Length: 294
Image (cartoon, rainbow, N blue to C red):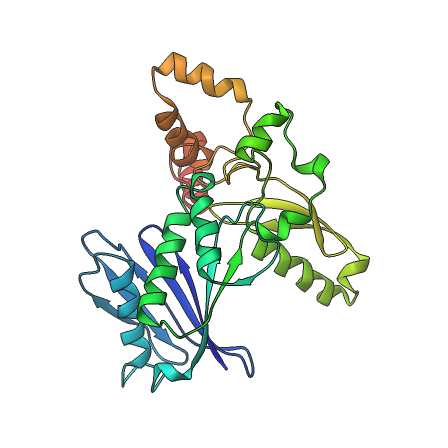
């Protein structure tokens, strides 16, 4: 069984092809700068050097077509035919309260994910574009959605409810959702393996570390709490995201700077965190290098 895993961003498409008989990676790659000048694909067949191809890639449908071409290529491809594919898996950021696990992608699931776009306007549209692209190119291949929010659906009410009027939750589903769920699920299970104990017997704090970072409390293999909230913005200080701030600070700075909510959101998501504090970079390596240089 061979499974293609796809992770679509707003201007990128990451992929890996797995042979599930031994869970080995046959090939992986990245399509970047989708819809902008300088688009390219970097494709790597396991055991061979990477191949980079610069080409016009105006949208995700073309991006996926380029991926298929790379996988079927006579020199650096790993498939003789698309009939070798058993399924395509998608990483999807936000499923709201709708799904607590992975699901087969149907039209009902797509409709549900469209409804969640207001909850993740920076992420879900790109994830959906990936699903549409695969559906058009491979209409008969089963697709599975794996959701960042699903693992955290086991959080108890006292962990996910905000101290705001309850009717906002009823009307807009305002609550803590949590993210990086696929990572926290994997890390907790892997930690249990290394410790030689069943995950059901452990209390574990898991950390997802990257430009976006989060922490989760995992009890018996289930998420009990997590640092991110309604969006991936709160929690620990990240590369360009502020993490937790006093909510009143947002309106205070908006008034002082004379900027609207959209501009303030950009500041908190793109200009804050390590980048905002250091004034140098969102990458700690660059910050340490600058510090060493005085």
